[in-house]
Image (cartoon, rainbow over all chains, first blue to last red; front, side, top):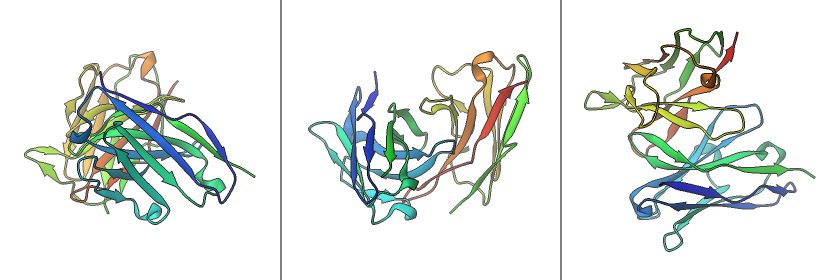
Length: 118
Length: 114
């Protein structure tokens, strides 16, 4: 079955960087893009971007361009997202999901809770 | 980019009720064939979102048939025909835009027990 398993919770100080991983199984990794969505406490879902493991193409939400980098390791079937120059506004749950361009994100990771605090 | 506005933001209902949630787009949503690039998700507290409906009206595998989706163009509706206790959650609509495929979420409708 399709599964996406994310890295565990993390605590960072303002100004630091974080790299979250999303390890996939149960489907052909290069056939689907991986998208990242975050959710601040008590808030709605915010799309961050996607990456195609097939060719490395990315599309970032304008808000995150220049501060977020998404990568993949096809041999490890894993997607990564790095967020730099963290502030308290980046405190959120971060989700990865398999992305079908017509269906939307159809299978989701369990989420990675990031806390940014001094 | 297309913006999605969901209404109501909050809805209180009882088990057995029929409820309709609306998602309105700032522009007409593109489609493939007759199906629009519009999806609905359910999110329970502390959990990842779950895909319910895609292509505006196609039920995702394993989703109960009491959920249905309809609409096209700028207005889309999620209907739950008879609310069950496990349906109390927050619901989001999502649009996958045309290339390069940015995604847009609605702000959500929180459905609570009356």
